Image (tube, rainbow, N blue to C red; front, side):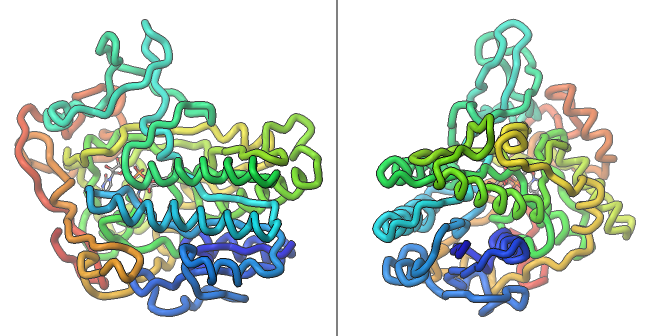
Length: 439
Ligand code: UD1
């Protein structure tokens, strides 16, 4: 197939382009090569690459010429840290997707794979022994400040057990980025209904691996920890380190995209993806978790990465917290396995060992992110992690074994970062242009 991969110069998009080419597809990339993100065309990007912005109808239309399917990865990523993020997330992610879908519809291109995220769920799934499956509200700042990190049952305030999230969980976006991902899914569903096209949305969990962008206030935690280790600074594990995520390797994510492409191709031919398919059928969107199925706490991830990095530097569990962070999000990849044939191949220990020494993407500019302008398509980020990163308790932070942190996860409110009184904000340390700078 002739496939357009948007965001093809990026972390995930570049791996997808490689995987699809290796499988025999003819791939054209589209990437804005935003100066805020790239210093020109990255060396690892091979093959055809059109330079253009997904919000630009002319650039998109030209890039779609002769294309059979689209894999849409171009997006503004990260969590969105304050109000001023709203317009840029809506513009790049929502408007960009709408422009792309309109052009695909006009050109009669019927196959779409679209990147979504586990952030559409908000908190993960929780069970109360009395009330069954419940949906806790966002954690109260007062609880976080007092080191009570585990969500409680909204009805009886008892501690909750965690469960794996399946794709039918309610959508509950809790920040600008998450809202834009939900909007992208809805737009893709509308496009499929209006055109009879087939679409698969892939809800990525915490993706890591080679070419992950180095630490910025918008980076995922794995890249932040890797940057810390390289700079000889202990990774700072927030809360009590017991928050759970599913760290999925970028090559597994690329493989999921290839399988989704094959599924929408089958659907477009009138056949469901598999005999028992719940997947994309013509005129519909089907979303899947893309996870490793091997969840770990953030404390365990920090410990594994530090051990693999091998300089003896140990993570510190700080008790800091970020408003808007969710506590646990652990997914079931069972539907993707059943319908797409997806199975993560890279185990946590192997992936972290590779990631500890893998090449990361350097920041484009050796200046703080706040210097970047709207014209770069990234938006003004005149803010700091200090504005969103708070510390619970008295401000002490000791070097603690992450194994202790993971134990703490089963004892709500009693982790190592669970002191009794709140003190304000401290900064986090970021590394931009290879030099540590305090935010
Ligand atoms: C991340 C991404 C999100 C993506 C999702 C699924 C970011 C900022 N977030 O969400 O865009 O959709 O994965 O792929 O890229 N933490 C520390 N120390 C730090 C930084 C963070 O302990 O220095 C903790 C956080 O408090 C949080 C956890 O690590 O509990 C994960 O943080 P992070 O990777 O930033 O965000 P996610 O919510 O998992």
